[in-house]
Amino acid sequence: DIPNPFGLLTPGAGVSAMVGNSTWIDNYRNLKERMSNHFQEMAPKQLASGDTTPNILDSSFVVTANATPTTITNFSNGFAFQTLRILVGDANTSFANGSTLQTTSGKTIQAQEGAIYTFTNVNGVWHQNQ
Image (cartoon, rainbow, N blue to C red; front, side, top):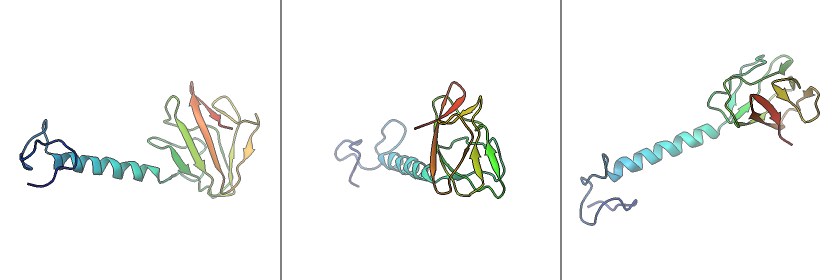
């Protein structure tokens, strides 16, 4: 018998014993895949250069790479209460204060390269966190 690290098999049952519809090996593989996906998600997604309303679907951490001056006015495909961290990877990004994105200063801000800005979506409006 192979040892059962998850405590899902009865003693002496061996790897062929079923737990629901899968063996403990399947459970291990599923856990390993979920953990791998979690850590891949932690790597920042690069936003398209020049996009003023970048797509942040399935993202919580993004990086800018704007080749020309770009003012972000909104983030598309966000969801309620989503928190988004933006690593500024260029000297060309700014965030416009407006009806869909609100900065703490109430004004358009020129983002500093290397800084991380955080916004949270509340009722369809992205609020800069302090």
